Length: 618
Ligand SMILES: Nc1ncnc2c1ncn2[C@@H]1O[C@H](COP(=O)(O)OP(=O)(O)O)[C@@H](O)[C@H]1O
Ligand SMILES: [Mg+2]
Picture 1: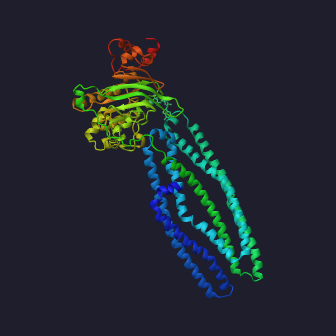
Picture 2: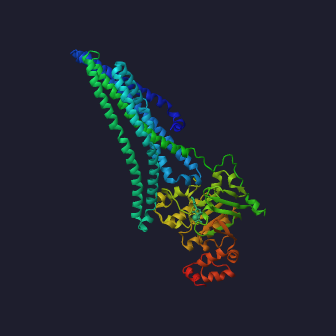
Picture 3: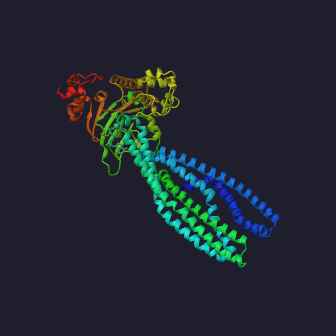
């Protein structure tokens, strides 16, 4: 909490001084009130002097009005500080989360980051508001009342001195048991957020697999678990108030008893006894409020450490000090200079955690400019992980990855990610319009550029059919588009802004074979046209589980459990790589496999009934 105050409190220092100062003035009036009442009782009521009662009454009213005015100023300062700090913390968290690399995001998990940026910041905000308003009030009132009471009479003060530690002890015992629970509560909220997110974002799948009951059960368990902890802590802390008030009222009885005797013998006046009772209640109530403050601060400190954990997490992928990389001159190619490898991986390996097995293991390959790399392999073979090393979404744990001859770690991240356009496996669009989604890579792209990209991505037809065209709305997650349409829009998005390298991670999986082939043809044409127009040809890496998508690639990399099982052209691999041959046999028709030995088979051949055919040993 202190660390957060140090980081974000500076701007609000003035408010944090004025607020408590105003509160202090209110507290002084509160402390004086019992004394004025005592005077009112002794000099007004006791002496049957109505004018004295009215006079003291007016003093009390004036004190109340002044006190309220200062309270209002304090409230305003508290609101400005807490809301301002909350907004700043949220902004800083969001900004910092955006700087974190995939590895850190994986470590925290999205639901936990969401709870930290919402619920945890709210807890801190509440504590700051209470801190400005109450941190001075209750301790001051408690100590001030105690001193004032002792000043009235030391003998009665002994009762006070017994009650206060008794309440302090109860308070300490209860708090010591409650604090661990508050920390657990936040972690349990994270779990609820996780289940909620999974259940709601996957609502269609849940329904399709009739898993609603299971999901409800999972949610109920998490909610019950959180509720049980909250109830346990609630039960414990509910002891606090009754016990405190019991001790307090016993104290009041004792004061009235002893005070009554002293009034009888003329050592004290009735007004002094009343003032004493008032101070006593004020002190003990203050202690109860201090206890509540401690609860709020304990929760806030658990939240603050979760917020600090994110803010202190250094992004593992940075580009500090990296100078812009000079791209190869198109003339170098035309002049027949030594070909520059657009992509080159040298013994690149990657693992998701210290103890985890390598998801990518010792991959070495070189892809010249303008060529196409196909990556094929079973599910979980490391295809997505391998291509995510190219735009440096993850850093290789060993070996190196170079783009245009320069190590990705030497590129400025913006330049690298502008040069390398990625179409992720999961097509993700954000709410807005088609135009706002397409211009992510190049905010200044013209309509002509956007239509050219849509044409290449085989998406222009359905966009043209929309009455608003490029300005047609896109709902959150692109829900108002089909899976195939979403994929085509994300492909078009990657093509806007003339990338030098295009990575498509299984991004044509929802396209039919004809559209998939037309897409690859358009990309190849664009690459050739780019080179002819004096630019750099487009280099492409296509990840797919379909042989038909990668068979035309200049180089195919077959992945098996993260390692390269084969590298070469379709024909070479069919002849030499058993795994590749097996994949082909499970997918291609007999004629294609036969054609394989001699002439190349058509790129977009349909594969209906292929599986049966291959199984029957064609
Ligand atoms: N974020 C992650 N955290 C931990 N392990 C992961 C993560 N993403 C993928 N993996 C693991 O890495 C391996 C390769 O995954 P991936 O590259 O997605 O495979 P593919 O794209 O070939 O289906 C799998 O075993 C998978 O379980
Ligand atoms: Mg994948």
